[in-house]
Length: 348
Image (cartoon, rainbow, N blue to C red; front, side, top):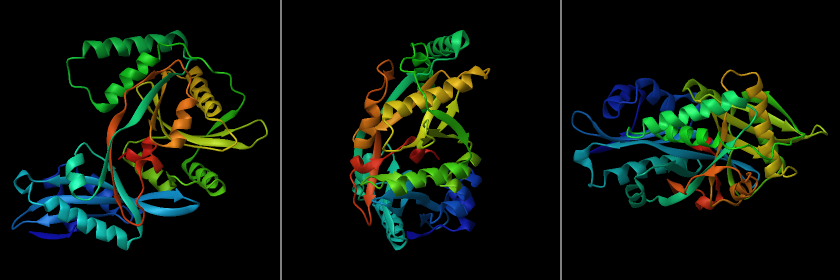
């Protein structure tokens, strides 16, 4: 079987192999904002029988430098080709291409840890923990909404529940809890994508660290928005007018998922969390659809995220450690403990 780079003319064949839609294939491999991206395919006599893709556009800050990384995505092999070393060949081709583009490493979330490990990735299990915080401020309507969602969740408990459905259900259970630690003197203002991207880069440039931290670009934010991953971005400033940090949330069914955040070293994590809750409470006052909870997902192995966990109020719900993640070294060979994996890393 021939291993070759996927071309735009392969769109139809790629979608026949893995039917996610022509627009998704085109956006992930050939959108100018997500370069360098590429996929390699296994060409049979009359059809494609395997594909592995490396998605670009994920720039990381590390020790004050900006470096490129790649995300492994859209892995698919026909059952008849499995167990023959084909996936390892596809990964090898993608890896060589990524090294040619000075990629730091490739990473991804997958439940198929073993095949990835056989292809040269390091696998990690149970690295992530979710926290569900009540926001407060929604009043009786907010409480009723959480109770309604909870009852509907119990009614449908025998039906298969997707990832986001489970998050929303837990978020609304948390919404029934009292919200504490709400005192906050900082200002929170909604900002556009460009201001957000420039702001987080400024924090990274003035406070370099040894972790690998995704610096979300304006292009990536627009790219996600076009794929129905709609984010609201905010800046937090203190009484002196200094920036305490930036954060981006995604609202789903009355819950706010904290997708991305960057905190100034002068601001404590607990103060920053109070600022985020303030933003959600302020929005609740003028909204017919109150936001009942803030959902925070943290890499339990990363020191920066561990500090964030210590700043979370005690009245909250939390999950067990979950998640599967893989990393393939290129110019760098990091452990997952060095990756500040905010949820936006994994949105697609």
